[in-house]
Amino acid sequence: MVAMTLLNWAFDIALGSALLWLAWRCLFTRNLFESVVLFVAFGLLMTIAWMRLEAPDVAMAEAAIGAGLTGALLMSALARLERPRTGQEDSP
Amino acid sequence: MTGMLRWAFAGLLALLAVGLVSVVLQIPEIGGGLRSQVMAQLPESGVDHAVTAVLLNFRGYDTFLELVVLLLALFGAWGLSDSIDEAQLDTDIAVLTELVAFLVPVLILVAAYLLWVGAYSPGGAFQGGAVLAGAGVLLSLCDPGWRSRRIERTAELLLVPGVLVFLLVGLGSMLLGGQFLEYPKDIAGSLILLIEAFAMLSIAVTLHTLFAGTPRVGGDR
Image 1 (cartoon, each protein chain N blue to C red):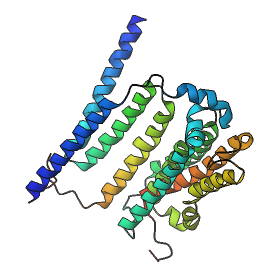
Image 2: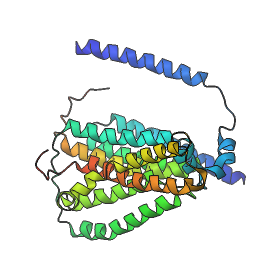
Image 3: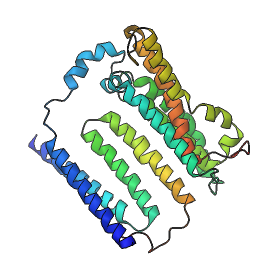
């Protein structure tokens, strides 16, 4: 029982840190394509986080809309942008 | 000039951050939330799943406005670009085509299931609509022009019914003596399914149109 609790804690901490790390990388990476891919990965992990919070409805919406469709939307927006001008974007 | 602007912007953002933090700190602690109230009212709502009851009945007005916002977002996207070029894709990939031919019917079935099951367990119009839109996105990846050739007019007509049916049901319940969106109890379940069915179609078409743009068919765009 204690082992299960510890395992849950370890999983949640790993999940939370992975989310924070992905969010950071997603915002601050130079390559926009990479940003989109990271955003989708973030959405998928967020789905797991919602499941851990026992909110299956939100998890489903997150997987379908957050990870799936928003990713596709961002990709199509990216495809319509000009080639990103490297080094000229606003630096943080 | 841009440097000054940037500092001003950073200052504003810092103010906003301070404001947000102070607001969060002021939120009173409410134990238990509204769960017990929702559970107590659940039999009145016409559905057996608490989330669907809140979204479509107790807080139906919010969901109605969400649908309106989605539609407005599409209008905004249309305003930004009068004609959206179809994506330049290499569409002649056998594996992709085969896979999509297999997946799309499954996704349609899944969407219908999600819509139906929303009355009892997690699921509903937004999830179903997103799955349906996903099927459309897959089709667009294989065959960018499929909508322009087959169902463009129908698809454009399907953008609005989600909002319209919701509105009509809301007004109808006023005619029957209730408040706006206060469904009559004995047919609340059917009304919710009706609203959700049309909402799902509209959500799916709206999301897909956001992705694929509107192919020029009539030549008027």
